[in-house]
Length: 165
Image 1 (cartoon, rainbow, N blue to C red):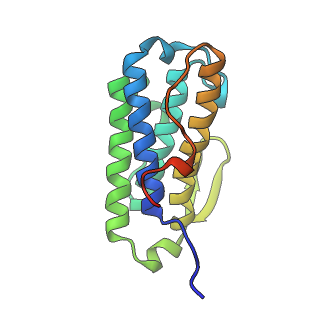
Image 2: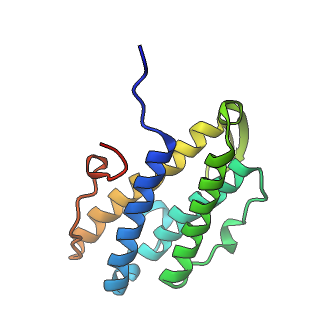
């Protein structure tokens, strides 16, 4: 019997598509970036975007065994600056998938986190965490903005993903 699975690539494609939709939406609604937001100690939506993309970038660097960018060094300015962080993270994740074999995916590595100290996880689990972390925060953000009078116009559930049938 084969195991049904969603691939890491499919999760990455879904996250990239969702982020592009959010990028277009924020470009059309720039005031929404400054809506107050208390999710993960963020003062504004802009701060939450920094958190989402910082996790993507920092963990993608860990997957590759690269030096991890300091959280405070990640810009929280313009939408373009924030999206550049996401683009770099996505590039890193694609590079990781292009070279990762089963042994690399199963290797457990230490993770120095901002809020939970040192954790240990396989590279496979870390990759999935990056995608699920972003997905979870996008859902929170959607609710927060809708409650603040900013409605989005596309379905966000994974069921609507274009990455798979």
